[in-house]
Length: 147
Image 1 (cartoon, rainbow, N blue to C red):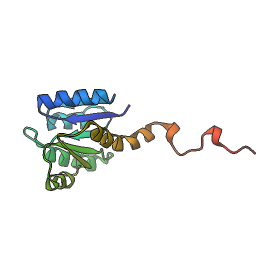
Image 2: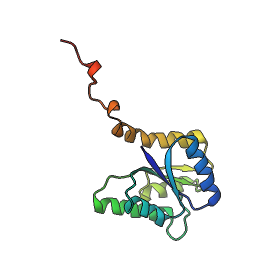
Image 3: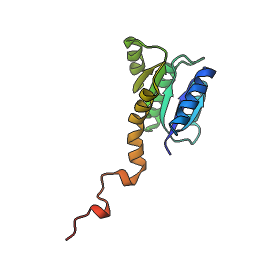
Image 4: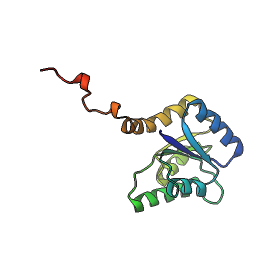
């Protein structure tokens, strides 16, 4: 199963995100701070395939958390997990700051459900193909040529 980690400190936004992700039938965990996110990603044996990252977080903000994730991935040689900024910061400069911090994409609040779903699907599609052998490019038995 493809599991999403969402990092959001605001109680109301966590509730909204929970409702939204449940409506999409995604498997997910929501944490309230960067420290919890780092613990889930690197200390627990949870296989996340995507991170939704708020920017304004207590103690360590989303930029710093993303940079730490990238540093730890590089140090351990682990795969690069896609990180999408989900933030109220909406300018082109804010988007560039997210990308410069190591995030892969960006969506500003308020977002439409369709836009969020499309963005998540964009990053989950490769994980789905990787996890579902029937979706790979190998020739399936019924597709083989008959002599």
